[in-house]
Image 1: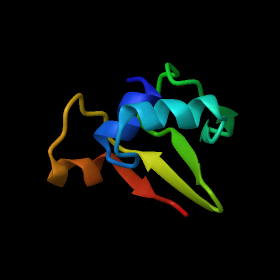
Image 2: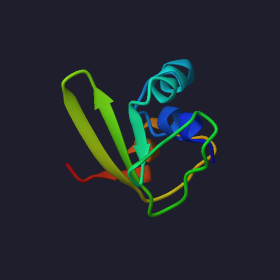
Image 3: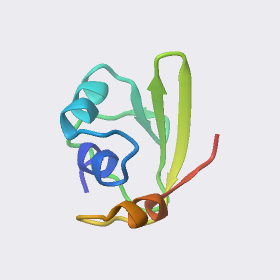
Image 4: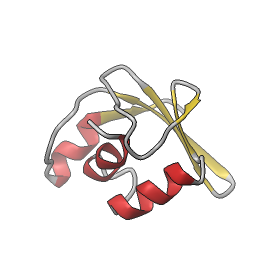
Length: 80
């Protein structure tokens, strides 16, 4: 699954366009490598997202093509 789609479906970022912009600005890392919007993400990958001054690190647990609000939180685990 593409990283921009995963961020939207997991609700870590509200809109796919915002996730795409974050990737283009090199604020998204997958396993310590800069991610482009089309970079594939797999279960077990570690995603690091920079929001201004704060950083969120999450581990991918599940990949769902579409998710309900209750299911979105089961797609990842916050590490930091």
